[in-house]
Length: 392
Image (cartoon, rainbow, N blue to C red; front, side, top):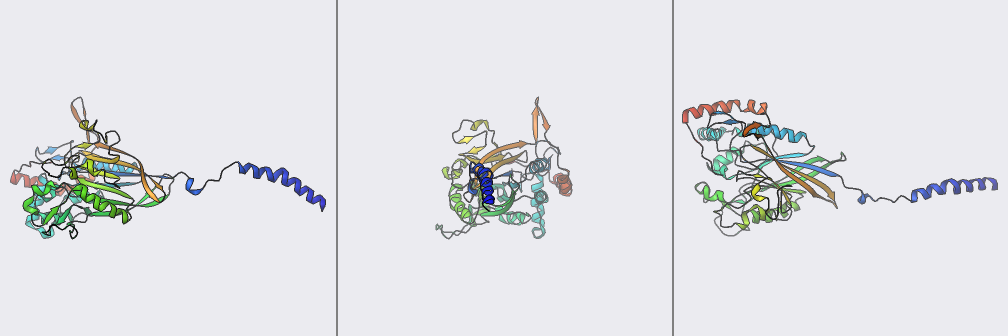
């Protein structure tokens, strides 16, 4: 027995103890110290389409490579295929602005009960996640607007247009539209793990629409500033579980000049509202990032596409660009945080030696879906000989 105990002691000190010592050199990694996995979330934007579903110029009565959602759709599908997680939004001024839009108004007046706006043949087929309203949505009155957006198979949001209750008390104000939506987005991280992220989407509209279409909204609606509205609703969205806040702002980077409240209605100040993670904007028919006039402006990073550190993008007009924001999210201390971002705009055409060349071909599915509406629009044009001046 003593011999056996001696052999066991020899094995213990010559084999087991060195193994234990070896493992003692490796620190124990706690679960919270493991590097956080990253979720790459791509956000896509169209804006100021003004009825231009096809790459067709109704004024010149010919095809074009310079605009049209039929070509932007090719960029959308490509951008989606490059990533695992994406969302698509429209930023308003969709319903009117070209011959197709005018044809839609005509059909609405003829039979509003069974009206379906033809733009939603395309928007629904592309599976937009949400949209907001532009100022031109109000051009033909609230009935036309409300009946038109019923055709959308995605939510519309606007937070700063309210029912006019004919008093100056704010606590009883009621939103005219749904102010925001919280989307439950299933995403896959860089380790292949699946997560559910709640993406809060809020819509804001430049208050200048009220002056431009006052005959349609006087006595029925009133409007508040972009900044004031965001400061009110962003905390509410956070309280209701939104992990990421995306603002759809139908406003240019600067406030409209006719507005008295310049400070409350410019994107620069809007981007300072705590809790906003991304801003998609429009209205002024410009692009961001990439504007030369903003290169040296403090607070604006023209390379990364941020305003006061917040990711932002503006996708031109009529579908001539696709806006893209790539967010890198990590789950830290129980919250999803934006660790980095990159914004860009992709054009559907380029200029080589002074000549315009297409970057993409039109999506044949869009052409097929729009064939009947397009032919009806051409017939309408022949009958009416319309022209279509546009304001931003």
